Image (cartoon, rainbow, N blue to C red; front, side):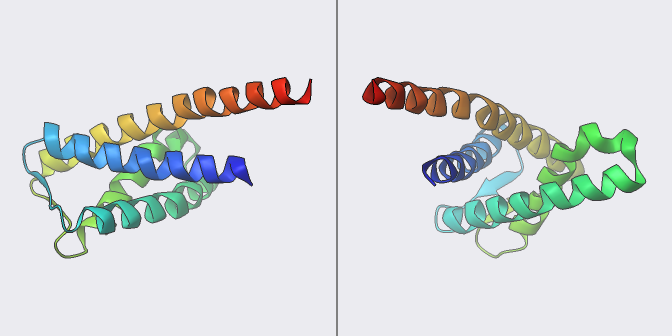
Amino acid sequence: MIRLLIRTGIFIGTAAVGLLAAAAVVDGVQLSLSGFLVAVGVFALAQSILGPFIFNIARQYAPAMLGGIGLVSTFVALLIASLFPDGLRISGVFTWVLATLVVWIVTAFGGWLLPLVLLKNRAGSRDSVAS
C-alpha cells in the first residue's frame, strides 16, 4: 500500500514538474496559478488512463508505434488538460510538439529515477529494522 502511495505521489509530482517546466521553457505554453491544480490533476488522471489504453491499441494494431506510446499519451493528456478553462493553454503546432517533448522527458525521467531512489531507501530502512 505504501509503495502505491509513493508511486502515485511520484506520478502526480512529476506531472506537476513537467507542466511547470513546459510553461517555463516553451513559449506559447501558459499555465495559470488558479488552474494549476486542475491541470495537474486532469493531466495525471488522463495520462494514467491513456497510457495503458494506447499501449494496448498500439500493440494490437501498430506494433512499430510501441516506442512512441509515452509521447502519444502525453500529447493526448495535454490536449485533455487544455480543454479545462483557466488552466493550461498551448498555442501553435510547434509549441504543442515542444510542450509534449518537455513534459514527456520530465515525467519519464522522474518516473524512472524517483522510484529507484525512494523505494530503494525504503527497502533499505525496512531491512535495517528487520535485523
